[in-house]
Amino acid sequence: MKRIVFIFLIISSISGETLTLKQCIEMALEKNEDIVFLKNICESSKSKVMESASGFWPQISANFLASRSVSPLSTTFGDAISSFPGLSEDIDVTTYRFGFSAQQNVWDFGRTLSILRQATLNEELSYLRYEKKKMEISYNVKKAYYSLLQAKAMEQITLLTLKEVEHLLELVKERQEQGMAIMIDVLNAETEYFKFKLEVEKASHNRELAEESLLRIIGKPIDSKIEIKEENFPEPEEFPLGMKTFEEYKNAVLISKIDLKEVEIEREISKIGLDMANSDWWPSIGASASYEWTDTKFFPQKPSWNIGLSITIPIFRGFSRLAKVELANYDLENAEIKKKNLISTIMIQAKSNYYKVLENKKSYDLAVKKENYLKNNFEAVNAKYNEGLSTITELIEAQTKKLSSGLEKQQLLYNYYISLSELEYDLNKY
Image (cartoon, rainbow, N blue to C red):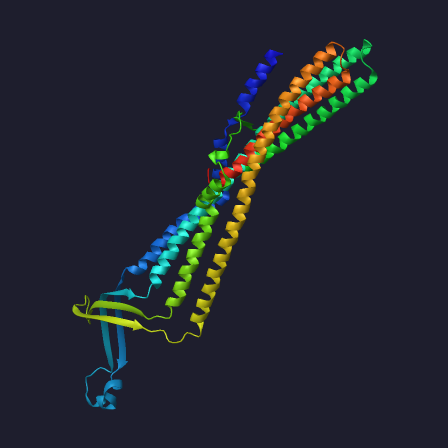
């Protein structure tokens, strides 16, 4: 039997790779299409910042023009030209022009600066959304990984428990044959046996579902095999993540929560949009310059130049500026409302998550005490039973309670760590 188990373990190690939590997260991030999409947006937003900054630089261009003009001579001198024999009937002129020109925005009351500020904030916003998606995927992988660990542990525990109950059932049957137990005792033991057998089936199904869930998240076919590294979770800490009070945790969430940073940037973009809408009422100042060479032969060598300063004063644009200002005010107001509502929602969720961790810790502590008590109780009942001071029914009940308490303790330990991951997600610990 030992040889068979040893061979089975070797085959398992060869056929399936044992994945750690970190490896699962890396696989999920690598194969997720949303990550690729958001990363491309981050790169394009950098280019948008460069494009917006170009408004502060002069726009320089080179130009070349070659033109030929043919027109009747009579259009210039009239019909009297016919009295001059030997003159051509047409005027044929070829002109070449080559030069440089430049335009420079001098002052537009902050419109160009606002465009650059908006582009910079959009770049930061795209990066936050990219990081937020990475943390969301990492959190989902971690939750699925822990759920699979929990399901596998519960399956193993239920199998061991079933063996103990089966052993007890055999013992009761032997006692019944010896006249030391009655049929009702056998029925009670069988009932407990079938109950735990059903628990084994449930645990097996939960393990299969947990495996499929993790495979789907990391981008592998759900019918493939997966092995994950077993982890021994330490006893829960007295204070979750070192946060002694909810106020301490709340302040940390307000500082680190990406959703709040995101909505704050959206509010700043709305404020800049309002500034841009108001700046449309003000004039803009621009400068221009050019230097050209013109001639009737190639290459032109007759220089000319000009410089200019222009002031554009907006007078009437069909009430579009009023509409822009009104829309910008609504956008800013909505951004303020969104921020206020988000803070309220986050605080409610944060309080719920924090208290849930504390409650799960207390439940686990009680489960540990309960398990110790029921173990001692079973030992006491078993000793009494051996001395004929308790019935087989009492022994079955004591062992069933002891085994159930072990399952409950293990379940609550995983519940604690799954709820703890909620706090880590709120604090961007991924």
